[in-house]
Image (cartoon, rainbow, N blue to C red; front, side, top):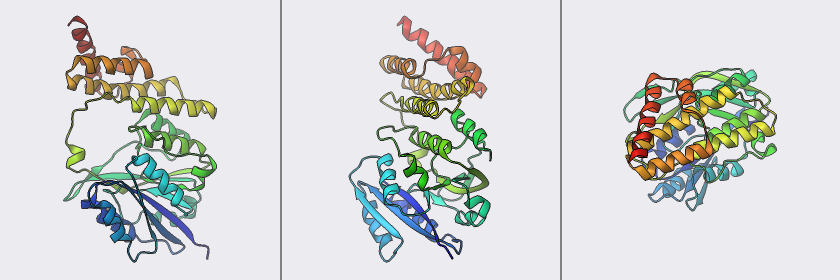
Length: 318
């Protein structure tokens, strides 16, 4: 019987408290009889003892590979993990998250395993119990799912999927170093475009951990237009591959990202920060106030644009 291999790439940075649970959630999976697994732990220059924890977890485990590197960010860590992998499939699990048992079993279905990308759902959990499903939109039609991804209404994390490894190497698709927000979005879009087949399995199998660091809001001190830059990369890639993205979908995506940046500018309450934000938005994603309001999905978001406009007038008069 031909053996298939799943390589699980785990970027690790300062997650000692959760790393063992993460790795065990992979090791304890029920694996189909014709599959085997490889775990690639990439320690991205952790300053706690996560690196040492990786070595301890790999001790005596033939299917765990550990890579130690200086801190270069999650994109580089994932790229190194991809290069070190040797499976037919690649999936990504962050070092503080988990896989629900049964994730690998969906590849038992030949119709599923025959697809280039197998996407599945995720849930949010805390330290004591499961909290909720991500509840994002989905579709098993590839073009419809791509539309949801462009609009940012589907899950944008690169986790929550199995990808044929050849997709990365045959199409030279790797994570963009230096883009801190939106790097997953870019990669997911590119992989979807290049995939010849796609399926969405409507099961919440990826556990996304909400910890104190992720739920506590921290005021940003620098303007971060990375998501807008990522959108421009996506549109350039679509154009280069003759894939049509509608003006409506672009406007919806811009409205969502611009709103997030405007929210940061309002909360910062600093005229210089506000001005820098407004300039960045105008540079990377010019769009009228009316389009922002029209294409925003919720009433509170529409109100947010109005508040931003009022702040703009106030700072202009100061």
